[in-house]
Image 1 (cartoon, rainbow, N blue to C red):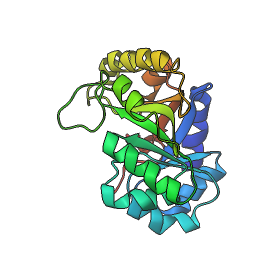
Image 2: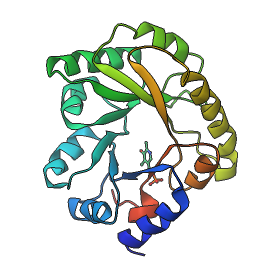
Image 3: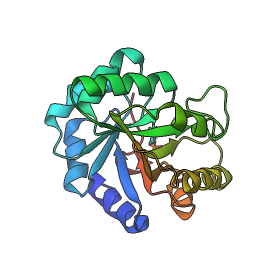
Image 4: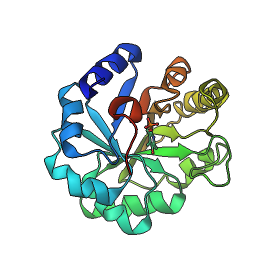
Length: 216
Ligand SMILES: *Cc1c(COP(=O)(O)O)cnc(C)c1O
């Protein structure tokens, strides 16, 4: 199957859910093939890799979905429309500061460690309420959504994690605060995006089902 065929097949399954085409390790020619096939959002994991590629990528929305290190925040704020992988208070404060310096309001999602896995990034679901209060004064970040990477279990077993995320999402949509406007729920990857859509994802992040297995 070609990139074009894969994208079109996935679009048919999406309904109103948006697709983030995950392009880590993929060269710009194939990224552009996906954009020409209709992809409007791309997701990259590494700031440096994206910086090296971005000048050659066709117009599209650019999301950071991988862990962001402190020393890359400034570049990330320059390069990305949305930073989906915000996983600490310190990071969001730093993003606010770097965004302020260039007069930008940076869109971010909060990453939730929905399986409470010690090795995974993200806020605990019970921490999010407190975080929202703590970032009240930040004027250069705008929290637009939630993102999660559930434990690596079978697609059917991820369903319970997606359900928990959906409940949290529905609760946080009600938050009335100037810099919070939670509208997106980013969950589901190649192996489980169908389950995520059934459970209310507004955005799925799909790489290998579009480009084939990654070569590192
Ligand atoms: C790589 C990656 C994806 C896509 O994974 P596939 O299994 O190739 O679809 C989605 N989200 C994040 C955060 C990733 O790092």
